[in-house]
Length: 427
Ligand code: UD1
Image (cartoon, rainbow, N blue to C red):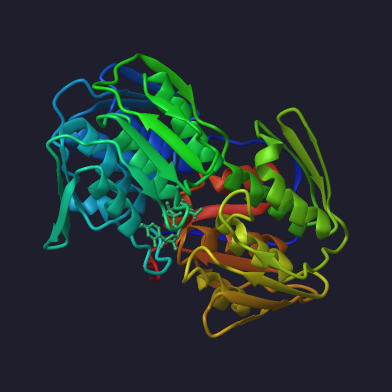
C-alpha cells in the first residue's frame, strides 16, 4: 500500500504545467464509444480513474492505445455494452456509460456505481432522464439493466444541475430520434469540453455551458477526431492553495484563468496576490493567510465542491474564524477528523454541512489517512504547511485524480515522497 511521507515547512516556488482534467476526460472516454471512426484524445491524464475507464473500453470491445498523454480509441466493432463489476465498483463515473451504451447498442448492463464515498450519490436523475427518452431500466442483484429499441428526444428538466446526469443525457441524446432539451443543465467547463468533443464526431448540440442544452440526434456518429482535453481546474486550484499555505510563489502554465475565478477570488480575499496572463496564473502568498467569513460550495460558476477540503485545510492555518458550507454533497467531511489530528480547530455542525474553523498558528505533522480523493489532497496540503513530518496513508485515493502529485510538489520544492509500505490501507 502506498503512502506519502511529507516534511512540512518548505515554501513552494517555481512553475508547473497543469495537465488535462479528469472530469472532462472521463465523459469524453465514454463518448469515444459513440464514434465509429478513430478517436485521438490528447492531454489525457495518467491517473487511475482513466486507466480503469480504459479497461472498461477494452472489455466492451474497443481497441485502445495509451502512450504518454495521448489515448487512441477505436470503437468500430460491435460492443458488448456490459461493464464488469470489479471495475465499475471503483468508479462512480462508470455510470456515464449508461447513456453512451444505450445510444450505441440499445442496451447497457452495469453494476451500481462506486467511487469516493460522498453520501448517497444517487443516480435517480440519470435514470429518470433516460426513461423519458424511451429506455427501460431495472435493477436486479446489484446490477442495472437498461434497454431500448430506439431512444427518442425528450424535454427533460433536471431538479438539480447534476454534472453526471447532464453528461449521461447528452451522450444518450446525440443518437436519439428527434430533439432533446435538457433544462437546468450543469454548466461546468467540463460539460462544454464534452460538447466540443461530441460536435467534432458529428453531433448537433447547442447551449453547453448554459442552463439549457438542445441536442438533435443523429443516426450514427463517425468522424476521425483529435481532441485536446481542457486543463484540470481542480489540480490547478490544489497547487494554488499549496503555494498559499506554504508562503510560496508559483506560476501555473497551461490553464484558463477564467475557470479558476471562484478559487482565485477566495485566495485573494485570504491575502494572496494573483495575476493572470494568457494561459498562466501567478500567485504570491502573504506571510499569513487571512480567514474568510464564509465559503459556500455551489454548482458552477459557484465555488467548486471539489476544492472544499483543500480550503478547509488552508483556513485551518489562516488568521481568524472562517465558515465553510458544503451544499453539493451530503457527506463531504472525512478530512475534518484527520485535520484535527494535525491540530486543526474545526467544528462540524450536526448536519455535517457546515465547518466552523478557528485558524491555528500552525499545524503539526501526524499520521493521517485519506478517505477520498479530495480529502487526500487536503491532507497533503496540511502536511506541507505543518511543523515536522507527516504520513498520509491511502495514496491510492489521491492517485485517482492527481497524476504524480508528489513529483509536481517536489519540483516546486516540497519535501515529499511516495513510499510503498506493508501497512494495509485504512478504510
Ligand atoms: C461530478 C464530478 C465530481 C464533482 C461533482 C460536483 C466527475 C467524474 N465528477 O460528480 O468531481 O464533485 O460533479 O461538481 O465529473 N445527485 C442526485 N441524483 C442524481 C445525480 C446527482 O441526487 O441523479 C446528487 C448527488 O448525490 C450529489 C449532487 O447531486 O449530492 C452532485 O452530483 P453530480 O453533480 O451529479 O456530481 P457527479 O457527476 O457525481
